[in-house]
Length: 286
Length: 348
Image (cartoon, rainbow over all chains, first blue to last red; front, side, top):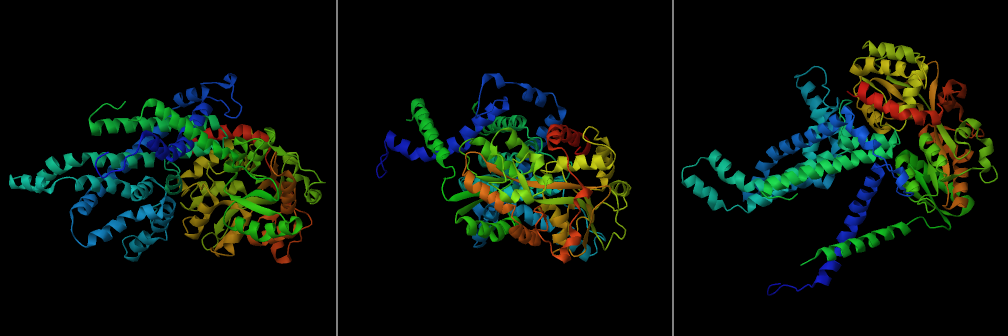
């Protein structure tokens, strides 16, 4: 530790880390292990090797329906993360670079999804997009349409809702990384004849990739695990893995298969996360 | 530098720390831990049942809000040391707890109000649970738009399938806890049964293009009705009556022939919990006095035969011979197949 710092020994670090490790162990590691055990048909409270079976994994691998909803879930995550990145980048850039007094106000507005939470935002979008909601009132009131439109219950509504919910998680890392880019680099590019687009494409964007990748990852993982919003805003053809898990627990009472779906979702998310980090950092993490 | 050994030590310490949570189960003594759904249900539990219980026992009541799947999972996770003493369950999960030996049989000496609770509300659970309320299915409809509502399930599906009601229909979704009950009931009402579900799935496929959304929670369908997203659909009587006298005065409810689906909410005493107080709690749930107050607030019909329903509310109650119940054990066996068919035929 340098001068002026507080020297903390190995024991001190261990004590400081203990609460975090306890939370991670209780909240993630132990439930994860229980899920893994259950996915092989073993009852965690009365385990025995006789219960061990691969039949639930065979069912998953042999059924196109589940492959399709895993595909839908990942595709949904990629679409939402891409749209969120496109919308969040200008906002993050503005928050990092602008010296306007309005910056604080924009920052507060940007952070509101965090303060309100996913469930409340979902209910808000249900009100806005309903047949008697704000959008339809505006469209019918101005004569653009004569009958209210069906805006809820489909891919469109779910994507709009998820982009809103996850927006802050994309803006924050982008803003942080843009703040670290020396503005002199952009000035130098402009001085050397590059236009605004070329400056953005060849200077700002490459230097911001770490922030975009971090935001992309957070948003992607959040979307893949989202349950309430897809359930409430999605239509009958819209199923993602978390809804299928819920269905297996509540209706089929098939916890082993629900565990298989959960383990698969975790594994796929981890693989995507590692690939993304590897691409972003340019080194092997696997 | 933190070594691998340090990390393992930390993980071990974390596990031990996390394991301490296991002792945070319900304390025995003069407290009973019970369950309740949220909203009006919680209001009724707190305003009608708990004061009655406290007056009789002097004990405290701890209410755990949530839903049957979560409560059942909690009881199964800690057999012998349950975090709940009494559960307000769904039928299929009640049978599941019963089969796993995690609930206690109710007897008339410990739950005196059982003797005024008809067999229909006890025997499906072999007295390992007793329902303190029941509700029946039917259709709600917007009386401003639909002047002649269907009279039978067959007529409803036929007219809906032809698009007579427009794209303004909603029915329960499969993830809804009672989704399989409805599928069985559609099949039965349309000439099929537990082993012949085709009539239900054929009818559902035909009306699918006219369905705005299959609803997953009762709150969802209520919101759809209030926002006029839907004009007609399948719902429980109590919820429909509550809406028509409140936020949706245009709404009417009709029971369709040949019969309505009846659903129960079996109250159960969890083995190894505070069983003495849990029996008292179930007895309170079956007591005619708070049941009447509950009915006035919720509109779900009480099961104690001694409850005297006010004259102006009697018309809403369905005679029990017009209702049908599935065999819950058979339904539990068929439910995974229903989910599979639903995913392939309705959700595609």
